[in-house]
Image 1 (spheres, rainbow, N blue to C red):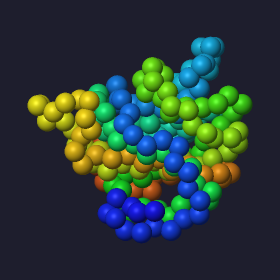
Image 2 (cartoon, one colour; image 1 turned 90 degrees about the vertical axis):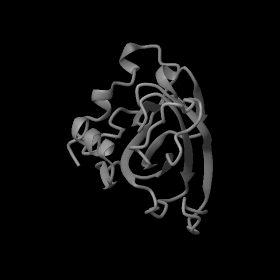
Image 3 (cartoon, rainbow, N blue to C red; image 1 turned 180 degrees about the horizontal axis):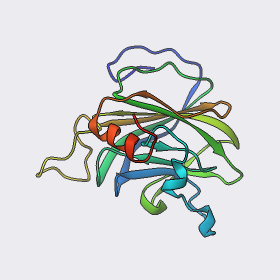
Length: 189
């Protein structure tokens, strides 16, 4: 596997769960149960970040993860990978956080705003660790850019592997946007 700089990274088995563009509204996207019928099952941002240090990846609700994107509205380039063990840390990313994630009984999907578009994620029930990476979080569209294309220089990666539940962690923080959200929804940077 190559990192974003083209350097070779070694790891055990990796399965691509998603690779492509994701529509962003209100600066957010999710891992969620798109067929939630009960209001109590809805993703709640306050609950997602409860007792967490980081404010860009909220994993405190079972079966749900709330992700903050750098852009308010538009399109991001996102990869989601399932690893057979903890992958090596890719230092080429500027923002890196980790959270625990409990996949409950219901299947989960990668979801755009309000689950208007959902992409199934093949995750079995159990405990996982999620590492969320961003490059170019402070970058945004120029006035003449098309919101259907990705912001040049901005990329996102989610790595998932089986792991026991543990406290979330801010691994790396360089942008003003990440610092703001760590202070706003998390316990601070």
